[in-house]
Image (cartoon, rainbow over all chains, first blue to last red; front, side, top):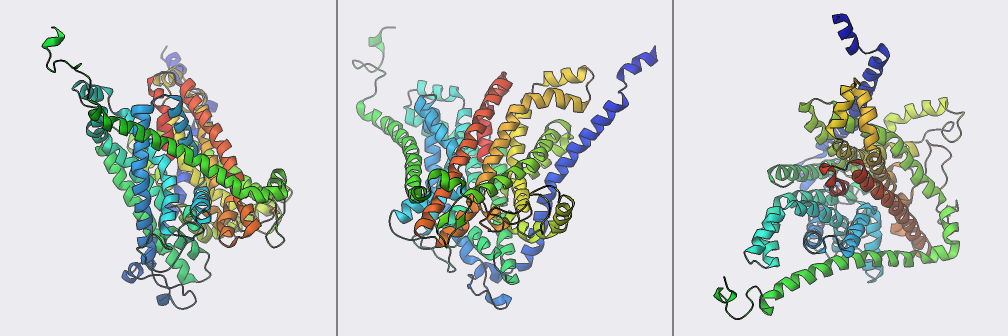
Length: 293
Length: 338
């Protein structure tokens, strides 16, 4: 009797083996996926920390690549340039993106026009980042007959951020309970008061997450900046002129035959990754605090 | 009970004065205008891009430009076939390597891993998406490519009987390494979407499979994977869209040779990489040809992404009729954005 009962639960050796092989293959796949990450982090720390020094962050690159390490300069202009360009890009794309998301959720809803906007936003999500660079080049450089400038880089990055901001904000705004809106409207609040005093404050923490992730993505982009913001050595606070940035500086340094310049690229890469990771970490913490997301 | 007893007297009580309605109207029309503006902007950009690409298309013909195999800057002949092929080879390789690994991570995270490990593994996979493209290029060219070269050479020698893959000397930047880096880069998005879809598989289905005596793997194969097939394909297509348009890492790793590569381990070029490298010095017809290459790339990614969206949305809609699935399309779109 008891033997029979056990027999029901005994797997044939073939099935057991197949189960074991498949599960180990899945585990192996996961491990394989994590190996590049560990290697990248390891090499970034090993090579990047070696080139970090106080002067690395406080001097501009000199453009001098043929002499000894001390004369090639640091990455001050690249760090500040990235911060300035991304700040302006955020100032454009965050209000515009949240505005469109509010329109989609509060006014457009499921009208054909709102769905058309959603479709085009999805299209924007899939556009390769270098194409944004070409767009801005055509409109702001060919169109005006002028040359590269920091703010043009910001415009290119804001196009890249826009769909991320709109989509993430829309998801959060949809989570704001309809009862909150209805209560406010029933108390006699006009629509705009409902949006500004009820909907946006409720959605804010959740939207911060999406916004921070958009900023983190934009900060690492090289391609849209190559022929919009250009590249330069000097620290600049003038967004109307050429502006250096971390990704472009790394890209230019990678192709150098000089070891010390390549080391500067590693140092700059570690700096950039650290900045992006901090943004991601803050986004995660905010998301955890948010009641909606 | 009567209307007259309500405060507000003569005027209909719920009506606001026109002045009080002004901010409401302004907000509504302002936001509508903003949404319309973004739509108009995209259409305008596209028209201008076509305009800038026109000289190249006029000279070589749309078909001739796209499928001619000569890209020669000094002779002013521009055919995008080598670039197109480079883009397709590297992206195909990225899918071939990246998708199975990404699906494995998704299965591991949703079905197999112990609860304690789930959050850290998910976070680590997502961390791959936080590494900028240029850093992948830097790591690829100074670490991955040199370390892999002997293995690639061994493979090339062993497989020399297969045309295009075998034979030839392995160069440090080559199609294969570029494809491998792309595989790493598309991993987080394919994994995220697969996870998203796998989490919508009803527990009933899984429990039913286990209850009938299926092993874990049989449960995954028979209950989870068929249910998620559409979503996984859609995720892979979105990954393909990413891989096609990826610029800087490929520009560093593919080797800048604007000809049809002799073999998989040789140098080539891709549509996005050629724009990044040549645009700075390009003049006249050359620049127009680069815009045309951009347009070809743009249209290619549009088609791939459009198919991907349709597949993902349909998979989320038909695959899972119960409530958690209702939120799947926007959530997937959100994940795709990040």
